[in-house]
Length: 83
Image 1 (cartoon, rainbow, N blue to C red):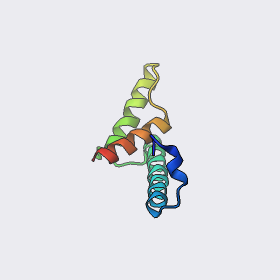
Image 2: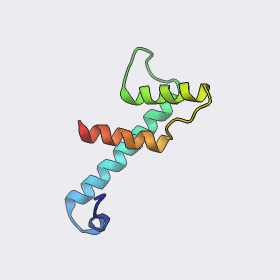
Image 3: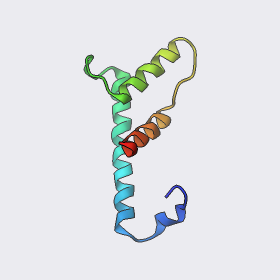
Image 4: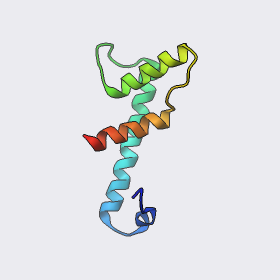
């Protein structure tokens, strides 16, 4: 789809399922990012999204710029696709 965005308009069920899955994953990732930012996760739990939020927090403390929420979501999609 990234190479040929016109395909998103074709009436195939697999395209609709793919778009629905992306919306669901994006929504869940956004919610998890917010939970991690508020500190509502188990302290002993280590996951890649939590590590990104922790690193962003560390960079913010030292005055540097980290990833935006959207960039973290895109990274999450990349890791899921690669896995």
